[in-house]
Image (tube, rainbow, N blue to C red; front, side, top):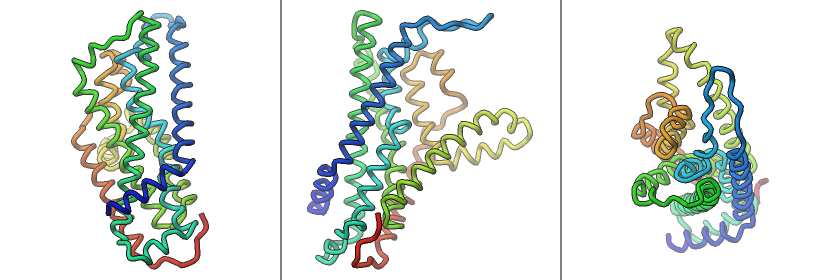
Length: 299
């Protein structure tokens, strides 16, 4: 098992896509955050009769408010890059034909899948750490620009909450990574896995946004059970719950209430995501038990 993990780690760290995707991800994050920092110095107009908070963007980009966006970036915006890497990492074994000689030498198929899954999850953890560090650095810069100092009191007061936020953000990415891995192994194609997982994420995010807008009207019509069912079953809904908890933990109370709504059930979300993760891992294990053609398949 150790040799398989070492081999998979060697493969993923030697693939340019792993680091190119991370670089693009960090560049997108830095660009978006710098735009928010620039907006934090602009006075926002308010509608007649409405009071617009003058420090809206300042609270978002300075510490400790910037922590929420830093840890939530990967499971929200950054999940696309991570899924491309995970799907390619699993699917190219069939396109290159490298899986056949590996299994012919007597490697366990179960251990092979577990090694792939473990390495893919470690890559997800590295991505999370990298995006969080960049977010904290930019938050420190914004704090220096706005307040003339970098607040560090939150390290002593909220360090446990910070570690818990990292855990919540990581747990929100795990089922998606395992889904990309499972689909790549089921269809033996990295391109198909990328397309299916990314399409699901896009449709889910758009669909959830529309449903949230329609929620008050539908609940008043007596179909509130529909949203209860969706809250319990949808992958993205439960991942969003963990992200919303991070937002509530670090944003000022007023902003946190505007950014999140409804009752949040962390344990329910964690259990549902665990069930999805187990199902995807099981699907990956079953998929590799089928016969594998000796010729390389298309990507």
